[in-house]
Amino acid sequence: MRDLVDTIFGPFLGWLTMVYNRISSLSVPLARPLDLSDYFGYFAFLGPVWQTCITTIISLAVLYFLIYVVVNNIALLQKMKNLIKWW
Image 1 (tube, helix red, strand yellow):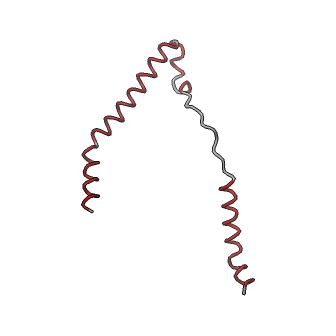
Image 2 (cartoon, one colour):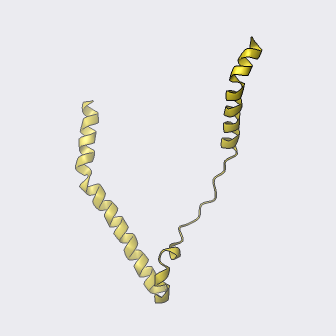
């Protein structure tokens, strides 16, 4: 009876073992900072001061946009909170 069960579930257990071995052998590469020169390389001819100014303006614009989205959706967040409280 044991041989019968092993022949039925053997391929499935082998597949699970293979998946486990592959998952356990995964590794995460070291973190690398985002190289903005790949995207803003066109501004390289302006000099380091102007590059800093432009990247600061773009960073502040992204931060402002995120804050704008959060502030405009506070009502939605409160509706969800009230929905969960009612439930």
